[in-house]
Image (tube, rainbow, N blue to C red; front, side, top):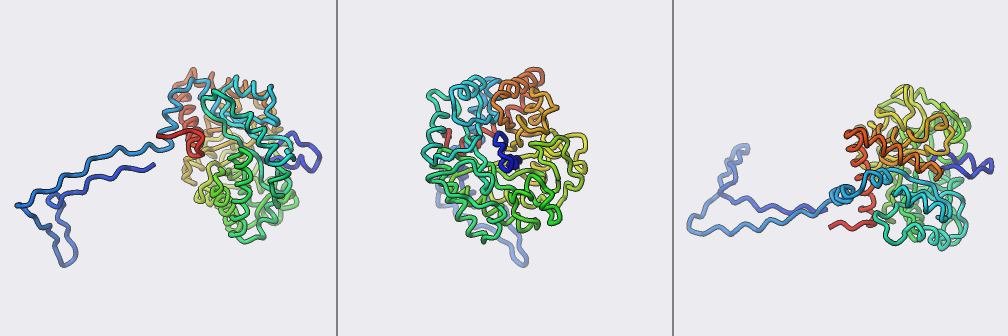
Length: 405
């Protein structure tokens, strides 16, 4: 997420199938094919009986088909719970109570974990309780540099993106795969990285959320795209999902939305070259794209990106992405302070998003409740919730958390 500035000021509460083959066409049924200078007419053999066509086999279900079956069996509240990601620190009894009560589908590990892979594994093990109907997705902010929540034995110290950008793409891909294996061994299968934001050269020291903190891969969209692609491919090889952030980019702003309200970008447009790294992430196989809470006046001046159907729509249309669209933090971020908690998650879903984050578990009830209430009175919203839940559960199927057969 976009709030690692807290690390500089000692505030750590934020960051937040196979289709069956068809029977071959018999020669007699093939159409005449005309080519330049020749006509092809198939030979026939009336005295020899034709071989029987092979029996048709059923196509294996896709991950999304399997997910749709799971979602269809969930109650409205359980579907809504799949659309909320909640911050947890130690998987305490209180945190687990919130997750169970609201049938939450995903968590993000908060705090600083310095007790290595074994320590983190103890936390993630508590998140897989007996009788769980749909397993949790476990995510973390593990970019490197100032944004590395998991440290200690078994975890490499990850260089910042600014340093990663000096490596060859092959080296970055190899190291990202290693970091991904470390995450997976601790029970974490989703990193909310890489940062795909491009920071103009003349704004590096003024851009609070990215440039000033060394979180970006540079000022050239092509260079950033190459590094983003390498990171995504490396993590994917380790079985870890990635999330390109913060669409459509927070490299041109001054304020940090975790600590500042009303942050605006008056430059980024629908055909902006700075969108190239996000496209590269999608092409490399990123499982999700994160949307920022900045307002982009040249795209939609009336709504922050997370509540803008125009902005979220670009992810589906311009990027051609049909995976999980996730929000930046809508819980503790200062940019959301004036928005009623009960309208934040459903506002994101109405805009076309799939998974709303609150790093503050105390807001989980209002996030889920707002989705349930809206779906109850609007069949269109209910259908939207079902589609979003299917995307989230599809990711779980793809990760092997749910069987598909």
